[in-house]
Structures are given as structure tokens and as C-alpha cells.
Image (spheres, rainbow, N blue to C red):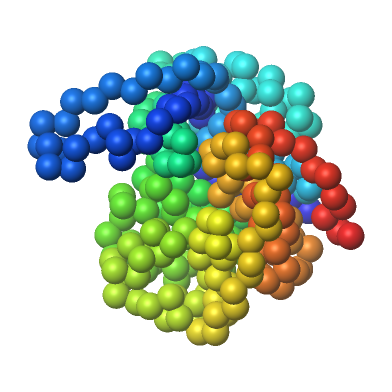
Length: 299
């Protein structure tokens, strides 16, 4: 069975600043902020939430179906998906705009500053979800605003259980819209900052949210994650990485493992344990799609 992954396909330009952002920014001068960072290291990677999650799920042995929109410069990404054995049958292409682009700068403490150009992603709502007996689970990752709203309703209409993973797209929605997503979803995943924003905008606690779905996971970076089921919280410890090299795409690697476990019918705790292991592998490598698996996920 396959997992339908709604989100972005993007090209990531990754830059490394060897100092600390905090040492270059004067807190009392933010109103006239004008800074420049020397970045000796620069590379271009395949990225985007849908692409990164699909990579993780494929690596684990799952069948990802990314649903996304590429621009006129998207031929290389289509070739990339083909080389990985990932189906692109739900990937559209817009000829009058660029593929989404993320410019990510990371400092020595793994803090990040990101500029994101959505490009073709803003047309992702043109992709439609229909009934598909080969799809057992789905996810709504950060995407165009209209696409996220419409795809949630389409998952419900198609009878496909899905994860609501708003990520950096969360600020686009008000409390009523976020509450509707939660009511439609089967599971919800956020990081700790997003979890606080989600609670603030919906006026629901994490325990409240967990009672409205089958489960809620709050990822905590190096501290692991919290799994909430029916108002009860379980802490799942992190896995120590071999090295901390690049955090870009760690959350997406984790979510690929989540989908793998959900498709297998695992508990959320077991899914989270696998996600923490895969995230540890990812953070030890540069780029969101350059790590490999060194263990049997079913072992």
C-alpha cells in the first residue's frame, strides 16, 4: 500500500555561516537591521517537504506518492524521483513559474535563517485527491494555502486517513481553520514551537487536541518527542547521532518514518522511536536527501 504525500518539491540552496547569528545581530538595533554573513560553504540540494518525506519513506521500504507542483525548471527533480524509484504520477508542472526555492543559512549552533520562494507550489491545489484503493494513509505537509485546505477535505471525501503536519505553513491559518484541520485529520504532528502556536490559535491544550484525533506528536529536537494519545503523554527519548552536521530535513525524515509505521499499523510510540532513529541518521549528513539506512526498520 502507498502513502500519498501532499507538500512541496523544492530546490534547497544551503549555506553555512561559520559564526553565530547572535554575535552578528544587535538586539537594540533590530529596527535598522542590515547584516551580511560570509558563507564559505554553499550547495544546491533536492528538497521540499514532500520530496524529503518521500525519500525517507522510500529508504525504509515504503511506497511514497508525492503530490506536488514543479515549475518550468523541474525536469531535474522529475529525473531525481525516477532515479529513486518514486512515482511522479501525482506531480504536476507549471510552465510560467519556477519550482519552489528555499535559501537556508545555518550557523555553528545549527540555528537557521530561511528565505522561501513558493513559485509553482502556489498552484498545488490544481492536484486533486480522489478515491484510490492503493493508498492507505496520507499526509498534508506545508504547501500552498489553498492546496492544504482543499486536500484535507479531499482526503476526508476519499476516506483516506491522514496526518495534519502544518509545519512552517501553520501561520497562514486562523484558529477556526486550524480547528477544522484537526477535526478532519486522523493524526497531528508539530514541533514544540508549532505546538504552542497551534494551542494559542485554537484555544485548545495539547491534551485537548489529542482527544480529537487518534494521536498527536510534538517533536522536541534533541530532546526526542512527546506522543499524546487520548490526553495522556508519553516521552520518547531521542537517539544520539554520530555527528551533528546539518539539521535541514530532519523533521521530514522523521515524518517519513511515521508514515512507514502508520501504514504497518504500529503504535504512535513505536513510530516515534523509528522516526528518532532516522532523524539521527539524517542530521549526521549534509542535505535533506543524502543519508542512507544502516539498520533494518522491521528488526
